[in-house]
Structure formats: structure tokens, C-alpha cells
Amino acid sequence: MKNHYYISAHCSISGNTVRYNNEVVFEGTESDIPGFLLSVYQHLGIKYPKFYKMDNLAKLGWLAAEILLKDFDKEKYQPTDIGVVLTNASSSLDADKRYFESVQDIASPALFVYTLPNIVIGEICIRHHFKGENAFYIFDRFNANFISRYVSVLLETGQLKACICGWAEMTTTGYKAVLFLIEKAGAIPFSIETVKMGYDSLPLVLTNGKKG
Image (cartoon, rainbow, N blue to C red; front, side):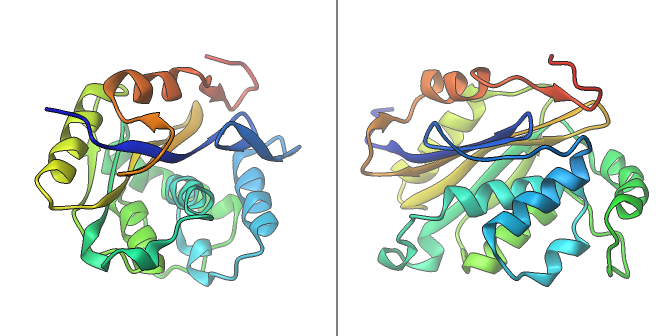
């Protein structure tokens, strides 16, 4: 399929560092993941009470999307023209189990288990009023081939005109989010190679401080 689309912006969160278009925009000093995520939220100056309902996976993906979209002119599209397609290797059962640990680290007013990976998608769409195709797929490992091909089909067939896609992973051993904003204009061609390069350029940083 002929490529007519580009990465107009990209964001990553890994190793207590937040990058936007390869520029470091925030560095935390916290030794624990919940503390780091809270510091990123406070740095952004956003007032979004439902942030405290989310488990750590949802917080990670939601924060990455907030930074990814900071310069995005969504008003040039219809809400149904913008979609979100994310992936990771965390099953919903894993997330449910970790919910009870995450609320001990950061108090949550949630009255229910607010943890399924789809909650990441939901909160991004709710906050930004995106109503296009959205899904969260589970893989054993990062799959640049699936992401690039699936999103390309959505764009080329006219189902979407812009898409947020990528990977958001929060496990007991590490965390990593790499998100891309795909549009018809940009400097970086959207392809399997560029998506894989964006992911591979960052380490998975484990909770014990070691890099994998």
C-alpha cells in the first residue's frame, strides 16, 4: 500500500524521562513509578480529577497522549476522523491484579476496578472528544508491522484522517510508552521501519533501576 502519511509528532516516556519530538521536556528524580507519573501530571498543570482513578498503565498512556497532542490542531478534523490504536503485552487480568497495588501508592477515589487497557483509550478519547476508530491490542511483544499496517489501512480507506498509535506498557518489571501522531503532513514517513526505530531507541527501564 502506497504511503501518503507521516509522523507529525511523537512522544515517549521511559527511564523517568519524557521526550517530545526527541526533545527532553521533563525529567523526574523519583525512585518509584507512581511518584514519577504524579510528578509528570503536576508538571503538565492539568486539572483532570479522573487521573487519580486510573491505574499506573492508564496514567502512563494518558500522560504520553497529553504530551503528544500538545501542539495538535484537532479543530481541523471532525471528531470521527481521529482515532486511537494502542498495543502492549499486558492482559486485563494482569492489570486488575496490579490495581490493588497501584492504589496503595497513589490514593484513588475510584469505586470500581478502573484498569482494563481500554481505559487508556477511553480516557484519551473522552478528554479530547475523539470518536473515530479506537482499539487496544495485546501482543507478546512490540509489533511495528501490525501497528503500521493496521493504521495505514484506516487512513488509506478514509476511515480516519489522523491517528494516535503506539505502545504503552506497565508491568511489574518496567514501563515504557512510545506514541506517534499520524497525519497527511509531517517530516517523518510513517512506515514499519520508522515506528520500529522509534520504539527500539528507548530502553525498558526496570523498577530496580536496571535497563533491559
